[in-house]
Structure formats: structure tokens, C-alpha cells
Image (tube, rainbow, N blue to C red; front, side):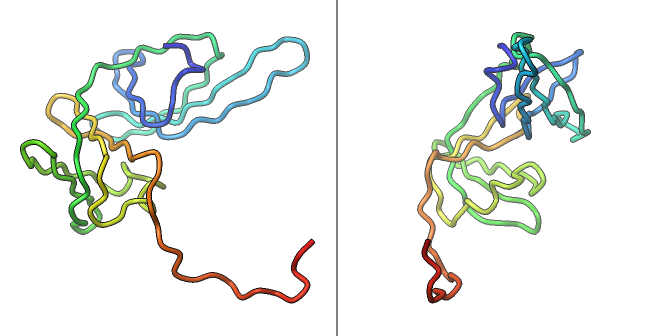
Length: 147
């Protein structure tokens, strides 16, 4: 797949090592060159070693074949999040650093999650496109705070 098609959570192979994309930074083209550069922050699977990679938009990355299993969030065990497979109730445990910023969107009984599995090892979770959250607190309204 082209570098411009890569998304957060994708699992790719680079130089014989499997990585999960955790963050993507896009730099705009400079002048007339038209070259857009993507900086990928990746972590090795398994192991979790950080690796930074910069590629032009037309450069290729090899996507790794993996299994996606539908699961529901069950509970938090220390720093780990436990998801249960929807078909056979297999528990999948993912560390908080693997979940990352998505942790704030995981609520009790969250449905529609997909666990990405490589060699019987859960490596990532794909959350649903939208979740329902409850607003608990907001700052007070300020008089004259409108434009």
C-alpha cells in the first residue's frame, strides 16, 4: 500500500520487522515540488520498540495479513484492557500503551470493536467509528462570552 493510504492502527512490515502504526504526521508540499512527506511513529509487534519512519506519499509499505475478530470491551485489569470475542468468548488482553489515546473512548460494554491478531497474539484494537459518551461536567457559562 502507498504511504498516503496508511492509517493509524495498520500493521505493516518494514525491513523484515512487523510494526503497528501509532501516529502519522503529514508535512505539506514545499514549493512546486509537490512531494508530501509522511512521518510514521511505529512500534514493533511483539516487543513494542519505537521506530520512526519518513516516506514520500508514493512510497510503498507492505501491509501484514492479520486476523480481525469482533469483540466487546469487558473490563480493565490493572493497566490492561480485556475484550471478549463475540463468537467464542476468548479474552484478549491489551496493555494501556497499545490502546493509547483511544482509552478515553472505551466504555463499559462497548460493542463493535475489532481485535487485530498476528500469530495468536492480540496486537491492536479498532474501535467503532462513533461512541456514545455522557458529559459529566462543563465549565460555567461566562456573561458576554459569545462573539
